Every structure is written in C-alpha cells, then in structure tokens.
Image (cartoon, rainbow, N blue to C red; front, top):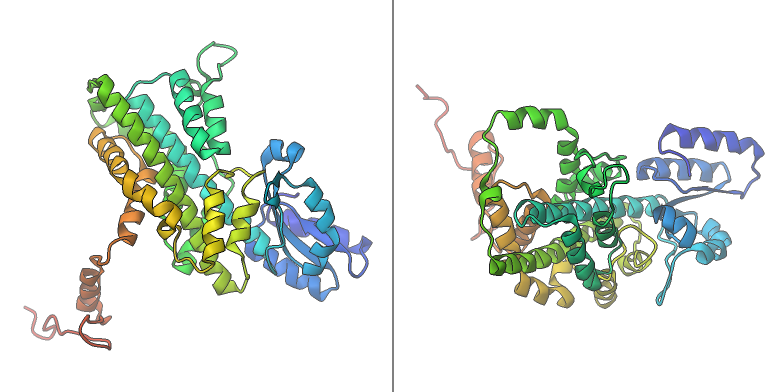
Length: 405
C-alpha cells in the first residue's frame, strides 16, 4: 500500500529486477483508475500479473477484516483468492471480497465507494448542524439520537458519529466536537469521482456537494472575512421551538437522513453502471453491494436491499424505483422538504441534503425546463433543437443579424 501517483511507479520499477515471469504485483492503495489501467497493460506486456485492489476499513478493518475490491489479472486473483477470502470481513452472504473485473475495475469501484463516503459524511454533518443550530441540542443529546437512528441504518459512519459526540476533550473537559476546527481535508478520491461523473455525463450532485463542502470548509479565513461583512445570522438563535416542534423536526431529520443517504448510494451505483458499460468492466452491482456490507467505511443495512434490488433486476435504471425504496420516498419525502425549507429560511447551509432532494425531484419530473435552454442555445449559437411532434433537428431564425441597428 503505497501513496498514489509516482511513488507506485517507483516501487514497481524497484521490484521488477527481482521478479520472474508470472509473478504477481498488487497495488492495495488508492490509485487513480487510469494509472492502474496503464500499469496493468504495461506489466501484462512484460509478463507480470497485476491487481489494482481497493481496500476499505481503516484501522478497524485492518484488524478485524476489511472490504477488498480487486480487479485486473483474473489469473492473479485465482492464485491469491484464498488469502484474501480469509482476511476479508465476513457476512452471512460470504466474505467481503470478489473479483470485480479486468483492468482497473477494483480501483474504479473503490473510487466510487469513496465518493459515496464523501456524500454520506456531509449529509450526517448537515443533520448534526441543524440539531445544533436550530434545536440547540447538546452533543450528548445528539449522540443519543444518532445511536437510536442507527438501529435502522446499522451504519459505520452513524456509529462513529454518536461515539464522537460522546467524547470529551481531555484537556478542557468540553465535548471534543466543540473543540475541533471546522476545516476538513481530503485526499482526492472524492474529486476523482466527481471528475469521472462529469466525464461520463452521469449526474452525482450529492457527491459533488460533499466534495465542494470540504473545499468551502477549507476556506476558513475567507469565510471569516465574508461573515464579518454581513449581519450575524440570528434567525436560528432566536427561533422558539416548542416540544411539539422539536419532536416533529427530529422526526423530519430522521427521514431526511435516510432518504438523502439512499440518494448518495443511488448516484454511486448509477456511475458504476454507466462506467461498466463505457469501459467494459463487466461489474456485477449485486456483488459490489455485497462486498460493501461489512468491513468498509460505507457499510450499512441499506446495502442488503440494494444487493437484493440488483439481484432482481441487474439493469435497474436507478435505485429510487426499486420496490424496497419507492414507498420510503413516498412516505418520507415531505419531511425531507420541511428540513431543507427550514434550513433555507434560517440561512443554514445544507448543500448535500438540498442537492439530493433536487436530484430526486429532477428524476421524477417527466418534464424539465431544458426546452428553454435548447431554445436559448439555438438563438445565440444555432445549435438546433428537437420537437415533441416530429422527428429531426430544427433551427429557428430568431433574429435578423444583418439588420441590427
């Protein structure tokens, strides 16, 4: 496991003199999938077997079993399969490892895993912030809620959230979360997911929001200067919340959290589906969901119905129309709208929650205002448009450019 980029190439080159034909090299780091594809092709030509293998689970996974996402040489995987089957996390459905496909399949799946991770982390952070800013809950009170909600989710990220909120700073005795600076970092895998979604034309607004939120948080000095130019936001601080209002808002937050997280997974699985077609990866989305069930950062009870959805329909166009999720959206979406609306009224940024809701609303809209965009494009650039009543491409002479005064 070597830092992504040129260090991987340097290590490979240092190994080559000591290798024989048919020997196996495994990159277990977070390499960019196009680098893995290049290395796989080059090493194959030189007679070596190469696996680009995504690994998720952090320190806990290293000790208790990670989720392992190998791709590349199938011959190599067949030789090391027993080893990784033994060390991977285990569920009732089997070990959390499988051969994903040729070339860079493994690192591509790991990249998208991390993109989903960015989105889910931001969604949880926004719910936490609403609890803090609007309901004025203490970290301990918030911890109890996240712990209770996690009975449904069985999510690693929700689990560590309630543990974080229970932790005190050893020096001050204050809740540690209140001492931690609001400036987050990233290693680039989320950005790769966003870049790739743009390259393939696959909308992933919730993942994009998760990445952008980190960039915005990193601009701490800029935010402080801009904040000083505006009146302090006091609406949330002055709002009187009754017991009934608080109970309703907590229930709405619960529903919003669930639906937004489903959207994060839906965006990631859609990207994997399109990439599998584009790059001939041959990904089995049911198996992807299965090996994410345990050992990895985005493990969650949601992965069981996701796995079942792709088992029933491998060509499912989007998770939100899976029978296991349709009713959840129908019964909980109004709560989600309430939270996003309330945040907007109070000036509280919830980019992931709102982006996920817009994604959902866009997908369920039979018609969108893109007809206006097409008319505008044709007006200024003669890009043509299609019509609803006949086939073909059309152009309108919107203006007489020869007689403009």
